[in-house]
Length: 357
Image (tube, rainbow, N blue to C red; front, side):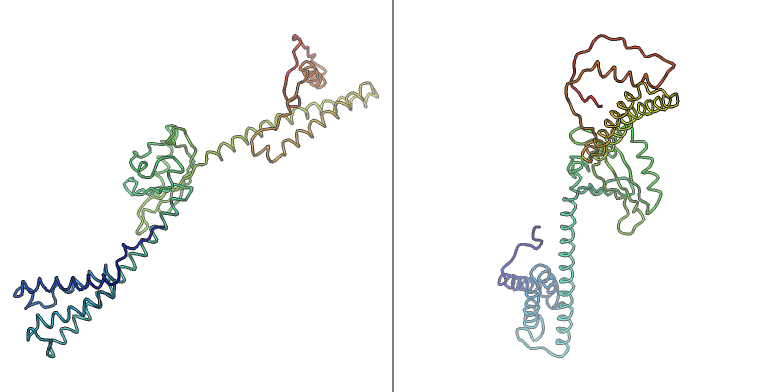
């Protein structure tokens, strides 16, 4: 973080400058002796105290008071040209000294407060620049009054560029009316917070998903604004969509072998009831094959990496598509006695793919 103080002035130069300021004030008073010298001996010296304490430090300011006291006594208090004072003059000089000290104290407090505020401001700006969220402050008239540097990490525009864009310029046309209506409703609900999921156009021209948290602080003293922080959630939305697609694939992949297993089980039970064991071993073998297939599918689907990627792992190899068609049709045929499934197609060539999926 950059140093907040002004360029360092050597200590001796501070005292030289303090002496110079008092000297300049004294020369001006002597030049206009009747106007501001004789009648107002302390005029201008208060100004030198303020300047010294504000920009040169307390030490040079106290030094300036001492030099100004000598100048006042010698040049502007009778008897002129002598370092002698009476009782009334000593009271005047004491009051001047006390008031000058008070000015130094006030100026020092102001300096400390200014440094503290600058430090906090720099810290705030550093935090905002490193934040992954963009922050925008909007006044009661809908004008954006502040935009954090981190907004560039979200939508590609710098803070200065974004503040120059018209309001709602980056909103998606299909969502603008809804977002505007929700925002308007929030402005009428003091202290409330609202989370919006919407799209914004990135500087690169692509649409990104953004989650915005908007807080109504219009009635909050010292704030009087709407505050919105938003971040890019495109990856999260895409992952959620992949997961939905994945669940759809899972449902389809598990439903097919389960249906066939149920059919084979029902046929086997019928044969047992009829005491007809013909083909029972074949059905049992097919059920075993389907069970193995289901176990493999379930293991694949429970793979955490598979779920996170939103896709199934494929075991690509060459297989006979004709045999697979006959196998599937045969499985379906076992589910009904009322219909006859007929295969009618030309012989197919071997293909590469995942036979189980």
